[in-house]
Amino acid sequence: MKVNQIKETIQIPIREIELEGELIIPSDAKGIVLFAHGSGSSRFSPRNQLVASYLRELHLGTFLIDLLTAEEEKIDLITREIRFDVELLANRLMEITQWLLRDKRGQFLPIGYFGSSTGAAAALIAAAKMEKTLSAVVSRGGRPDLASRFLPQVQTPTLLIVGGADRGVIELNEEAFDLLSAFKKIEIIPDATHLFEEPGALETVANLAGKWFLQYLSK
Image (cartoon, rainbow, N blue to C red):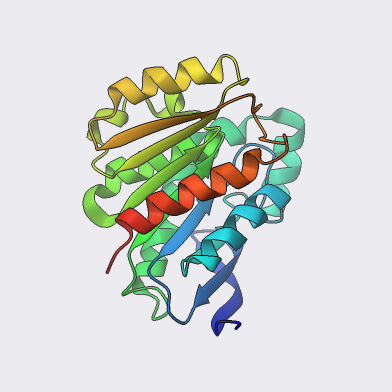
């Protein structure tokens, strides 16, 4: 039986720009997961959509929003600079979170972050600055090392998921893991590469993330 849900395309004004995203909240949602996309990705990414769909089956709302405008995306495709401005991305993520906390659709639900690549660094910086506002963070193939100076301040339970064949990124995640002072866990998926394109790899990511969010996103 299909669960009733809110599904809307949302535009959030942030100073001189406007960011757009897709908010889907099941009527019986236990919480909301806000996606912080990685470098060169977007809310339309099949990987993000697959994970979001799985989370909604677990009665979790999802908010897939692009942290860059369409114009910034065009510039970034050439320069590849904005995607690594993780503090800019974190500030935008915090403003989106504050909007969600004020909005009637999400204000009474606990919030988690699902970050990938450089978006994971932005999610962890935001978690550090917002202290106990968040309930959980999951990083998928992330670059938490880019948030290294903020990691000791993170109080939010954090799960780092890395591909077993993602050499270099594994080590960066292990170093970041040691800096985290919050309750933490690292999961390495055997033979998976950075984008988790191998058969079953992304489904494993979704399953691990779902369990983490269900454990920590409770009313």
